[in-house]
Length: 451
Image (tube, rainbow, N blue to C red; front, top):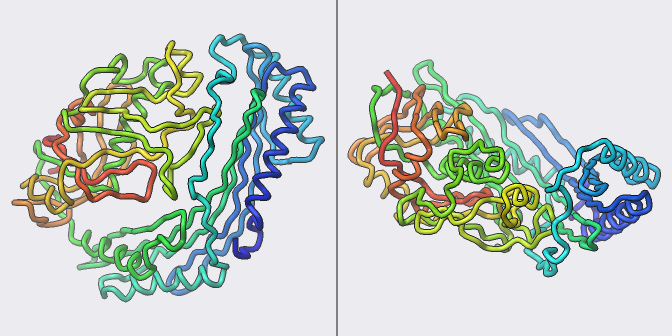
């Protein structure tokens, strides 16, 4: 990587160093009498800069390292962590974890994943792309982004700043089965937030771009102008009357619906019996056209990974096929609690997709006709136990497929079971900036609380 102050200079060498440390920790745990041990270590380094109103506000370098050590005495588990990699610190941390395990209760589901399930093929997923942006270059990029937005319109009267971040990391996991896996990765981002004013009323909005490879970022000018345009579009919001209406979730917020699904089918929610989708495996929860699937091995993607937090090989799989719930989201522990097999999702999902059955957002607006386009969600009003959904929303009122005016201070409500079954369409306007990728999503009817 280019010189960014305190950043990692040779990530490949760091990966080797961390693997050796993990091996030493596992050996120390065995020496102290542990029946089994697993270690996760992360190293993150990078540069962040922020500018506002043409002035530099922040320049930050970071380098953080942490070890998480879990020791087992039979089926009793103890965990401890440290940021210190000296031999003395490692010995003390292993001892702390071992002592904690001694005080714990027996848990028949605790322990490492089975040895014969460990990942054996760890392909290079092309996740590491150093970016030659030192502090001076990053500042110049942030200033260019902010300047483009401030010049975009006289209605842009203030700025909450533009930020550039370039970070790299190394992750290593190992356990006493002999598995040690690791990878290096990079993440680069550029964002801007502006404030617009019209007739004494102000609104704020933002935009950002993120990628593994700095060459894949949107241009600084386009990010600044998009943030400014979104801000201007929000000016002059109106209230709308309370009604039952179709709701179109823009792609940048639609992924939240899929996140709600994954939370409900995660092992922790299921074995605690705190999910509205309890006992729904093999049952229809969406219309026939819906397919939601995981693709862990996509090169350069934000969510790619070849092994999970238990050391199991990830794999492509469907969670929803033809509207039917095909898999739960399980790690080793939750699978044992449920009497099932792990889906290799300890730590979460890797590159989740909702397949499209429609065109872009403009086509979905026409399909909706009259209703609400949601571009912002506020609050945490989602109950995973009951499926009840109620959140503050902002966006645009649509009539005859055409945006009429911005909308604010409304609430949209429903139940996720009904919302899933009433999902009419998903667009092909994918937001590819995150781990869960979907286009705009049209729900046929929700309760809109306004005037």
